[in-house]
Image (cartoon, rainbow, N blue to C red; front, side, top):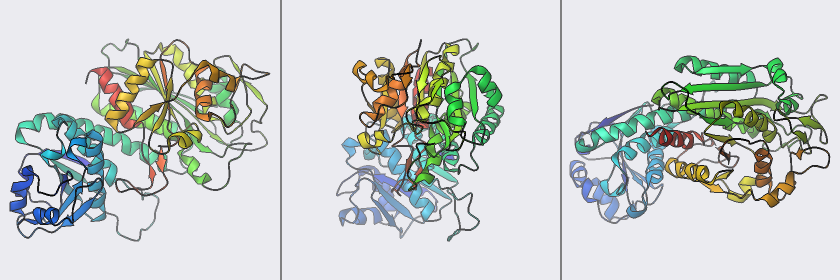
Length: 499
């Protein structure tokens, strides 16, 4: 989706659709008085009659009796005193989704001044575009025909005061790049497992690297064996699809010698559970088990557009997890790249196996920080539902930094403890560690397992299993992938780069 900043007064715009973000109230916000006059008092009638209250996610379509605006959409954002970047982003998404449903290829977006009190113009420009792109997104690429003709929202015009245009434009640029990364990620997430294989992911990474000039290394089966990535190989051995290990390098810090931030993404392109097979119901959703990998690739799309001044490495271990005569079995012991032996007591705890080899590989870069994103445990959904990412790590300062980035991104994290007592969950009688601790504290057990393979760098783990995709339609997004992690990673990296 293209975006632009315009400074034309809203009442003078000629547009097929103007979406206006309005706070809760019973009177027309002062900043919208001119627009109300230009549209024949239609805004006042909607608000003072009580038909539109400005509550979060509320939307009211109006048809102006005068002026050049064909349709006017009021979108509620809640109480003005509670409005944040995230609230405005969500309201923009609600507006864009309604624009798509209305068949508008372009629309203009305005936030009443009272709706963005305390939100800087740069932030407004960013979240307006991010939200609009999120709400307008839909995936119909694999449908031969649809019940209704497909209409994509191609562009959004974000209305800004002329005095704030430069700052708003700076935010728009960030928002457009982040939105591009999120679109890239959501498409990969949505593709079925017979299309998005480990080889396909590697090919997409190679194309991304070529487009933006990144360095890239892709290890095939033979190279993975040579490197001694026994945990990744163990998960892959039940599938006819070969695994891939992808390493991408973005060098934006001058000479490129500065210690990088490493992003690691779980890339299980389909997860049946292996021999410890999952129930059949909703197993099709296990194509989303590569959402961490998709988020890393999407972040690199954003990096290629923004070019911040820091170095970033992206690592993606990728495989399928399937049952077969060659599949790994419960009770088997494998040797990791790190050197530790692992007793596999549950083959459905496979994500941590491939990630531990990636975390071990990360040591060679002498990173300043390592962040991994993974749909690691169903238990995180039990603990935190669909609203928060489970966060664990070895460095409190880094975890605070990640949480702050998540707040700015609207991808909120909640910390879980990795106390020494929890280490008992992953102790093995016959190996250095086992890959599952049973039902209790399942998310923490997954985090502790990964911690066993972290050495020499600050590390934060993001369990995105509850937030990577939705199984129902929302007012601000369609059912399916959310691209969780792209905005958070981007906010984290931009702040590190001083952007």
